[in-house]
Length: 526
Image (tube, rainbow, N blue to C red):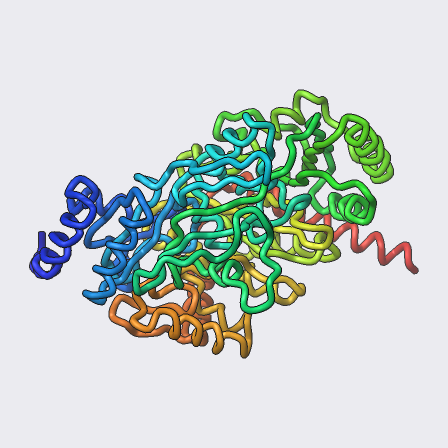
């Protein structure tokens, strides 16, 4: 332990003692090894980031009840110590790792019980640290369907996905997390318990909607303790369909036809050929296609049969090849494991953006263009969110050395900026992209910061996130400086070697194919 760390440890000793008295010694962790486990999320960070952010918490606590959380928050408020909420940390923007150290509250360690499944009123109440799969399976056993969940649902926790206003599997038919939540039990920065809605009915009362205020706040306004979700009657049948295409760009037009028809699948997801090449490298089952569109149907047998027939007609119109049912079933079963390519042995980081469906082809071209420009190996996956919103989630590989790791974030910035030019927006702020708030929300950013200041005047709830990028020393990084830094990372990244030359060659071939198609089109027009 160095001198600075020892000084912090001595300063935190009285706080640790208070926490131990409040929730029990076994639920308070201070060993360096244990604290290190909480210093990163889905995207591993180089040690150099410790210069800007104090990613290692000073103490980790594991509450079991809402009352435990109240005790923790009151101690934090009294001592003016920052709180970082954390579930399974399946996100990659630094939202669940500390910026200023302090107290990290791990909901997955103890707040993971299903409280109630109400079959008559179609809702479930569960603690924040429950996984979506845990809740999904329990409800299905009672003949009820949880309509939507994140693609990481085997490990992602309820509060984590709600806190980022997540989109995922089932969003196309039943809505995003915001549409699924009926009620939240939260602890405010002063320790007050608040119910934000109602369990059995939707909250369409006049006045400011507290559900919507907390959902998507990334834990910066309150600590979520329980979540109430609406349910649906379980379907009579579920059917998986997969269609193969020459390339991902070709998926756009049939997707538009489906979205403008009366067919309403549970889920529609897509993957490009690069994704399957990477799976093959990792030794996994991989389809031999240029791109695939996976569709999941559910409902009464007659309705599912009609939707299947209509989908086959639409896909045939665009020359898509229907894949065997065994492949479709496999793709559905793999819907939660999009990043198995990580098993190649090098890291990966995803980017996320929502775009209008009519920008599908342009978005595909833009993703490949950025990957080529930065000499990066990557793939594109994504899904439909509603009839006019598509989520692109390109991901890229990086070598786990310091410079490569840090400069690779240039892709996220470039893709985020590009999405704004296509009438879309990037998803999420966290610690690393909080400087985007002004760009995305415009003059509304001032009011968002005002709400944060009013509710959390001492800035103890997940500080340094969403409302602006701030270093561990309290220095706010203005958007202009952030953009300059990301731009410089992009310049450096171009000079670094490619992580996978053979996939880079595929991307080069795709670019050449697009150039040839455009040239042929010009010739035909003359």
